[in-house]
Length: 272
Image 1 (tube, helix red, strand yellow):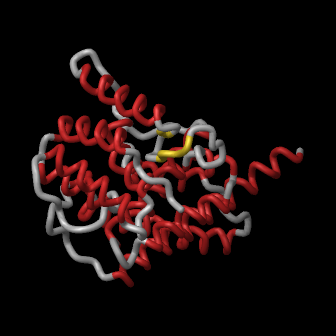
Image 2 (cartoon, helix red, strand yellow):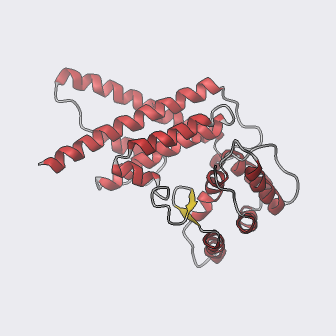
Image 3 (cartoon, helix red, strand yellow):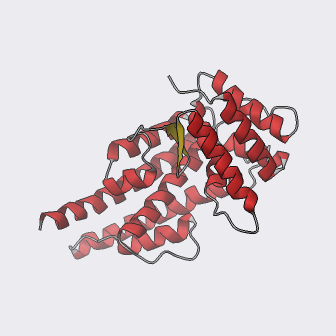
């Protein structure tokens, strides 16, 4: 059974997030994108955040800690600075509140029970370790969201592609593009992937890779038009579940393809 969000964590997160964003439309988008259930709650920004988080605890179809992690991910990922000291203070409040309840925040939006080493792994850990089972689980989680929230499912798939590309670039010490959105980072990875040595098959593979590039562009475009980071709002463009399923499954095929090439090359190198 998924763990519930403790009341003290709800209080801290609601206070920090509401103060940071201070916008009903932004908070509405953030919570809907994160998979929070139901209609927009009434009340001021802080009340709205607290109500939505409590609603996650009461909905058996929702994993409350998953939603919580998605809600705070962008805020927790910011770099504190001297001119915005409230960011560091807010991050400290959230971490301390989680710690008092034996919870911990990990990068990429994971809130887990402290000391749960396997659960505390991030997407980057799974990808770099060649942990196919955990990546499959992440896609399964996205697929399970399709009927309830296809927008969130597509955003999850896009995030996995983006994490794949950035982890691949870091692993092989490639040059990270200045624009780190999904398209540019994929082009760096695509340029590094080894092609089939047979000239005929090499041309065929280039065509497949061109198709994969279209998948990345399409999934990234979906995310741009419906994701909270780009102003999804209360009335985002509608997408049918079969369309969203196609995008998620295509993203899954791409990620597994790159992982298999990546880790086959690593295994070959280690065996020399």
